[in-house]
Length: 263
Image (cartoon, rainbow, N blue to C red; front, top):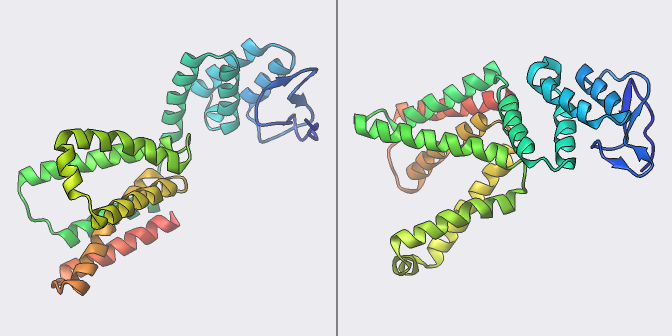
């Protein structure tokens, strides 16, 4: 492995703290303002052969030190040390802490406004009519969508979109087949359902790819623009009447998506 030119207090020759025969991958150089104090001190300890104190310092730092909490390098270094000692329990615990720390960032004001605008616009397009029971079902479905969107947001960081999609789809498909029976599944199988199924899977794949680029609230909000698209398609192809309220709702959704794009 080539030696890195020292920049700042430390430089790294690789993305991990891995040791190789006859050398260590962390070298002390001049000053590097990109590294937090906790990581700098841990690097010094590790470079002098004190890997356990270095790990202890990082573990304490990512929980109590503001700079270390916000340093991705500090988290990655600690993950690497735990992985090299094969401490799976500590690794899994740290993963949960990282999810909380990474997910705790506050969204921007434009992002919040965009999500609210999309929600109001969808409500205007769909209409506010309905019963309390229907509202309860709607809230439950919304909570379920929000929950699996957040799970997908972090799950997609650890796998490629294609394999992740396959893994999350296989189990529900098997359970569904067992619940409704193979006969009904076989009877429903025709070219149209195959095309619809492929389109649905492709849409979900696009959502997973979007979650790599944007926050979960933004992606979830933009997904609901499908209501506007369906309304427009119904007006064009089915001749349905689109009221001024629904048109206003569509405009508000477009405004919300624009706010999210610039957030």
